[in-house]
Length: 22
Image (cartoon, rainbow, N blue to C red):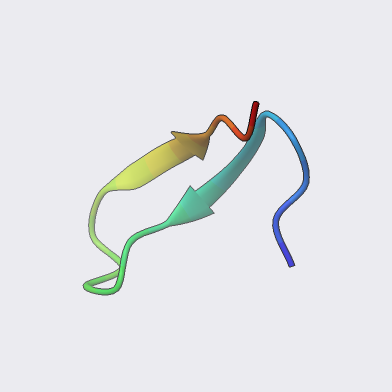
């Protein structure tokens, strides 16, 4: 479960992306 502004990995798990849920 990703929080607002949390750093998560993509499906590939290679590139870290910041999930911005607004």
